[in-house]
Length: 276
Image (cartoon, rainbow, N blue to C red):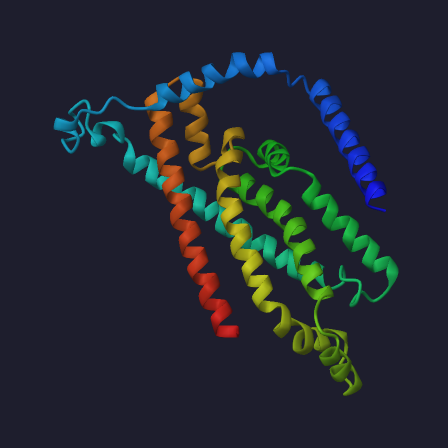
């Protein structure tokens, strides 16, 4: 039996290796290409680093070599970062509301019938299968350049992603409270409200906060196609090869995402403690 297991493991290992090699071949991932491109990646990142002088580090914005000189457009970039976070926040809220409405009929244990379950599941798959940047390209054409297209694009994708997570949380809920409410004469909506929602609310909150963190990054990326926020500015400076400005914006984005992650983690821990 041990020999058979070793043979099977070896066979699966060879199969996986063969599939990886085929994937690398189809994707044109060659060692020579990696060896040629990696130094260029390092060279590009080196260009993003500013020329700072220790003696002038904390001097004014007109002194070359200072931090203020590097972040000379900090006021404009800070506002665009704020706009990006608001795009993500509103899109997450809209996506969470849509997912909340869709998740209960998309859960196999609560769906009124098989047809409703299948239709809702396939609809959620459709929403999350299309990348949010594709939604943004379509909506920028429909609504014009600006934050509205970004909000709607991220919200549509969030409905699909959060809807699946919400539905799986509902499927893992204890059904005994549900049966008790139904036996007492409660209808479907009442049973969902009083038997299921109290159980899954902490998980829903955790998923929403996690999705907000993801959407902050997504809001930056979709700005590349004109959907507003700091991403639009980042695309502009990349296209014009303003390397030090690219580096400054990237630093600000990393700091902003780190702050949002820490704040979301604190809110999540507090909320779970309150409901625990």
